[in-house]
Length: 308
Image (cartoon, rainbow, N blue to C red; front, top):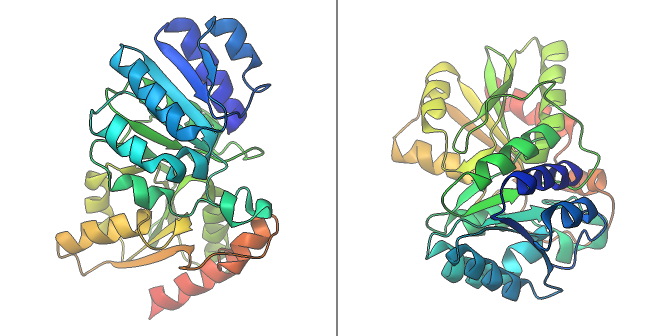
C-alpha cells in the first residue's frame, strides 16, 4: 500500500502545486520520485511528529494541502493533541497518513502496534477516517482526501498487500464497496482485513453452504448510513472485521449506530483485538492469531452465532 500511496501522491503533486509532503523521518528513498517531481515540497520533519502536525496546519492555513506521513502510532497517538487543536479545531485540509497500521509492525512490539488509532481519531470533530483495503483503494482514497475540504486520516498497511480490485471501483469518503455478493450474512471488512474476510466467506460457503456478502467498509467516519440501513434490513447477521481494538473501532461505531436506531432484528458480531497489550513479538499472522483473528476462529464464531 505504501508504494501505491507514494506513486499516487507524486502524480497528484505534479498536477497540483498546493500538494506537499511532510515526513516524520520515514520513506526517504520511497519518495525520491516525489522530491524530483514536486520541486522542494518535501519536508523531513525528523522524529518530531507533534511539530510536523503543527507545521502542516500552518501550511494548510496558508492555502496548501499538506500530507503528513509516518508509522501509524507516531502519526496519531504521539501527536493527538496537535491533531485535535491545530488541525481538527480549525477544520483544515490536512491528510494524515499512518503506514503499517494495526499489527503490520507486530515484530517490533507494542510501541509499533496501532490498535487504538481509529478510536482516538473518530472522536475528534471534523475529521474523516478512511481505511483502504488494497493498493487500488489506497490511490483512490488519497485522491478523495486531497479533494476533500477538511482533515482526513488515511490508515494504510505496509507492503505486500494484494490487489483486491481488478479495476478502479467507485470510491467516495463515507461510502463502502461491495467486493463479493452474498445472501445469508454480511462481512464488513476494514482496511487490510479483506484477504481474511474473503477467506472466511469462502470457508463458510464450501463447508457450511452459507453465502456471505463482503464489503470493503473503508470509511469509519462518516459511516455509510444508507448502506447500513439496507444491510440491517436484508441480513440476520452482520460481522465487522478489523485489525483494531474492539473498543472504539469500526465495530463500536456500527454498534453505536444500530443502538441509536433501536435496531434489534439484525445481530452484530465484532472481530478485533482484545483489551490488552500483546507483549510477545512475532510476524503479523502470529499476532493476529493471538487475538483470534484467523480464518478458522472467525468462521467458527460466525457459524455458531449465526445459527444460534
